[in-house]
Length: 209
Image (cartoon, rainbow, N blue to C red):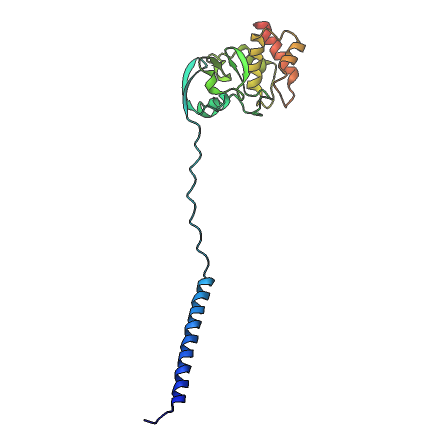
């Protein structure tokens, strides 16, 4: 084996040490860079919020057109929605849903009300009459017959409310003059403009009452 001097041996050993240190440093730098390049872990998904609870259902019994009807409803349900959506009594119309048009008028204990503004739960123990409860078999109520005789409707959408309000008007002892009818029927809107015929029909029914 050829001899090497001490200086060469020291130089070779120093070179190997420095190379090892440099290689280790690069490896460490690469590891750090790789870790830095990796995206931060996404946060754990939030647990789904609990669904909003609807109001508790309540059981009510309504006297409608002479029959007891039992319902399970939310406390906020209006009489109009209970009649139309749960009992299938769609004669009472949903016009404005704000009590401004009168298309939803029904009688409660003989008095006319806007059923879109009345809570169904508040009507327990009261006698509710809708347009479906007026006729006796094939015999029309006198107000229904008068509306037909005097052609007091056109599209017919407001007619059930007009008839129910007209009956309530007579129950109140009003409607004996054209001016009285116009004033106390002003809450019932006819967008077809059949007002003169409506007045005539109410006067005719009042004469038979």
